Each structure stands twice: as structure tokens, then as C-alpha cells.
Length: 346
Image (cartoon, rainbow, N blue to C red):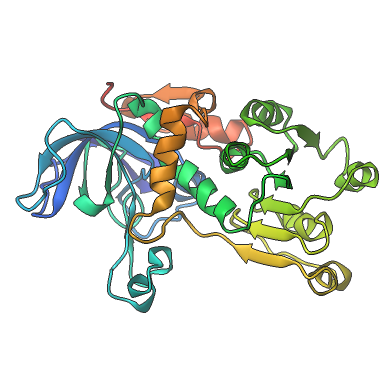
């Protein structure tokens, strides 16, 4: 089979390797579409892989090509998406029902071969059926949507709330979509990129702010502070802004992954005490029973049209295009997951 393998920093090779064989509890999936995640950019451009060579890709959909002898829920030809986390099932976190906290996990497209290939193997428990009404192209966006759902659910969300979403990359945009579907009264989105802010409007943001033109200090001098803040950019600036621009007794969830040192002034950090803020993080998208309610909700949101991700898919590539979608995402100055490899069309 063909596979796109990262063999060194900023070096892909299109290789011909043996098609994987499923174990007795595994499903072999013929990949239809695979998305490019922001974490894939770091693995390719910065060499942040566990080992070379590696086949990337953990956001994907496809059809069942073969099943192991003990697989009972899937048949050849079934349309599916896949949860890429492979928790050990034995550590304290797994036994307590928190698979994302597993201390001995594997991960498709990171610690083992991923879906930038014609075929990939996954355990049956990681596989989810896709309704006929949902295209496999849209189903490839289920994984990042579950990240947004998990983050939104980390806070107590009420329909009369106002929410501030810091950062309008793909996870920020999907967070906006989830908040809209949950009936949040007012959603404020920020970014430095006007194009992404236009997408934020389409996803349901009521107010969009280009913070290079209007600061949040200026905006909130004239407007009420939000009850909810979701940080999705991973920026050292937005990490601090989350504390500054939330209502007293408000809630903050950090979804974005930080890659630089962050400095809080003592007055900003003290807002936790003085405002009795609830502050939490969000990691991946899993709950019990595995893979979790986030995955079922994502499929429902997309199937019913409550969240529309078609507009976020802005590029379709073949494996033969190698690094083109990676280069395009960097040229756009974004870590959005809006480029897909089309490997086997529907």
C-alpha cells in the first residue's frame, strides 16, 4: 500500500509498504480522508516525532476492509470514523474511567502508524459507525470536533451565558459551533486574522474582534464581561487575557496547547482569588465508556446539521502532493485543521 512517511525533519517520502494485518480484535480500515492537525505540523516541520520514520494522521474516516476473528460489531464495507487514542486500560486513570489521563497509552498517527496511508489498523473499541447521511469527508473532522466538545463540557454551560473564545483556529471555530449548538446566548470570538474571523461568524459568533485593531480592554470598557472563557490559541497573550476578561465567579477553560513560557502579573493571577474563578484545562476528547459521549455527540451534531464543518474544509489533496497542505497551512499563518488528504474517495 501507499503511505506518506515523514523520514526526517521537513522530509516526506511516499513509500510502498505492506498492508497491515488486523489482530483478532482489530479492524482494518480503508482510509477515505485524513486531516492535517496542528500537532502534525510540529511533527513534520520541527521533527517532534517519537521516532523516524513515522506515518502521521489521526483525524480520519474510511470503510472497513477486513475484520479480526473476534470482531462482532463491524462488517466489510461499513463506513466508520476512528478515535486515535489507545489507552492501556490497566492504569489507575483508565480503571477510574479517565482514558485521556492514561499513563501508558499509544496513539494512532503519533506513537504508531497513522492514516496518511491507504490502510490503517485500529482496535474495534476505537471504531464508530457513520450514518449514511454524513459524508466521509465531514466525518474526517469528527476528531477535532470532539476536542471542542470535551473542552466546552469542562465548564458548566447555561443557555443565558456569554462566552469568549480566544483564538479562531479550527479548534476555536469548532468550539464556537459547539457553544452555538448548546444555546449559549452570546459568543465573542477573537483572532488576529480577518479571514478566520469571517469563519467565526459563519460558525455562530455574534461578535468578532481583531485584537490587532481593537483591544479587549477597549471592547470590555463598553460591554459586559463573559461568564465563560475558552482559550484555544495556546498563545502566551491569550493565556493571560483569559484571566483578565472574565466576569467575577466566572469560568475559564484552557484548550490550546502552550509552546512558550507564560508570565502572569500577580494582579492578574490574583483574580482567581478575588473573583473566585473556576479554572480548568481540557486534554483530548475522551470519557467513559470509551471512547466517550463526545464522539457520539460529534456524530449527532454533524448528521443533524447542528454544526456545519463543510465550510472549514478548504483544501483536498492526494498523498502524492506530499507536504503541500502542510506548506499551505504555514503560509496562511494558521494551525487550522482544514486541509484533508483524499485517499480513497467515497
